[in-house]
Image 1 (tube, rainbow, N blue to C red):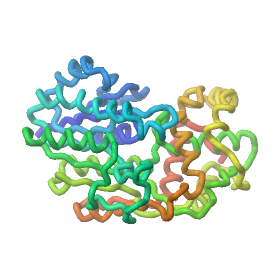
Image 2: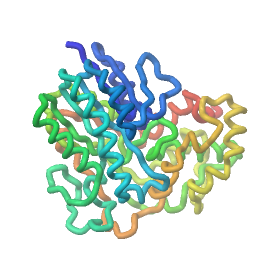
Image 3: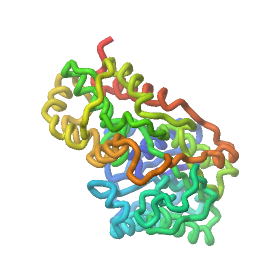
Length: 372
């Protein structure tokens, strides 16, 4: 049976990894859709599309009658990131984007068999001022009742479940924790700011000085973008995934203090002393230094450092380097028992993840290779 997966948000952190993963599966065709078309698309067909444009979306997706699977990982954020999570216009915009894609697609893709919807731990409402930690159970479990608040995740899921009444396809919802990957210029990828920060310090001959707030002993979780892609691949053809909602993490916890030494070693740097630094302020000031480094080493990266790291990723990374969040009594750790019981058991060591991803960035010449 022929399988054709449409990955929406294909240039994003999850979407890029999903395209790579599905492209390795025999008998699968992959088509990507995103605002930005990746520079290296390989054999995958990519379409540049603004999902807020209903007319353009109908024109494109109304011709995709052979799509059998959909991975919806598209997202729009507002500058500054966090306020956009509460902004009514942004909530409606993200709900509209899914409708603009799915309405024409569902009319023609009569062989559609499965939809994966990418959400995240904001579904638990910890970020929302009306909820916070009141009444929250740790670890976060998918089976617990929804804590009602305005969240485009809920609008999207409700829309798809309504569409399911008249369809024969299955739905799986994923809630990954903080995702790390090699895709540049994204809204919520802490890896690129860390890698670029380290590369700039190394070029100066300085050690890797960790942001002081990150050394507060606070348990955190991470998930490799490739692990999320593996889960999407599993869900696409696993009956056990049908109808499920699943948290995703690497399977362990970490502290920044525990992983900084491995990050420094991988970058070929000594670990320095903690210092007060905001990456949101530091990296834009170093535009010229980064551009000179791109030219000096012939990097594949954009000479504009902000196109590499993404402004919202700087905001996001700074937030995670500030120690324990205000008003957060315990870490918001996720249970991954549900997805394991359903049959997806992939896991990895988070320290190993940082090492591997930084080595990938060097191999792809996104950052300069260390001196061997």
